[in-house]
Length: 342
Image (cartoon, rainbow, N blue to C red; front, side, top):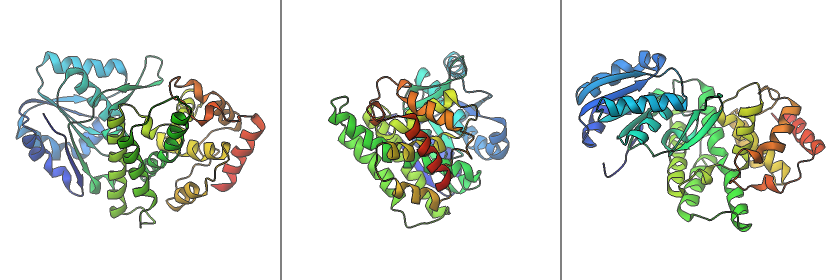
């Protein structure tokens, strides 16, 4: 396959067959989904796959690295020609990584917009100890995002997608900072794409979640994924706010959606480095993205500990947190400000 195929908009779910044909796919096709998503949309998607080739089903029940490797082994051993994965982030990351390992074309059909990983060259899978690990792979060679279908998913997943794209705000500040300190190199194209994804969302004419806004959000998330591909890393969309989110994944008992964690990290770090967070706060509140840490089940002590230990999450990702004042009293003050603001 010499090009990527991307289709975004309402009703696009009926274009699975035409997309596979356009990509020259035939033969054995592995259909990857979880039982719930399959029960909702499987009868719509599987006949389209069968019109192109023979279907081999793979039901996803976990998202560990070892499971993704098992799926890849089945693909190779069974001479599967293409992988089609439909569902949320866990299912798509299993399909994405299995396709990368087996070197097969991959059609991604997201059913949520909870994060920018839907089209990124990164799969987040669990290690043996249950902790998440970000693994480099390849962008999907094909993607279909039906915004009408996604509109029916829980509203919290859409709000998490808003939070994930807003985190580009802090990620780009951290990238500029790291480059100025001689700790990283700049990729202008990737930076511009991440900025465009952020601006498209923050300057949107819409002030509530509606079908037209979902199109804007979908395109922003896709642009963020493409920015990662250009950069060869998650640098354009991942800075101190993601380090904080990773720390929460490790040390916080209550597990929140990634998009809420990084949105909380964005506002918090802006406060830490004495930059005005009001633009981001106003935007999040407009779409009712609640990042009150108390509501998220994050205690004051956990908030302080995760912020102080965030830089340990990725040794090669230099950010403002590496030089910031992370005094306990200052962090507790920020925690309580966030409780009052959201």
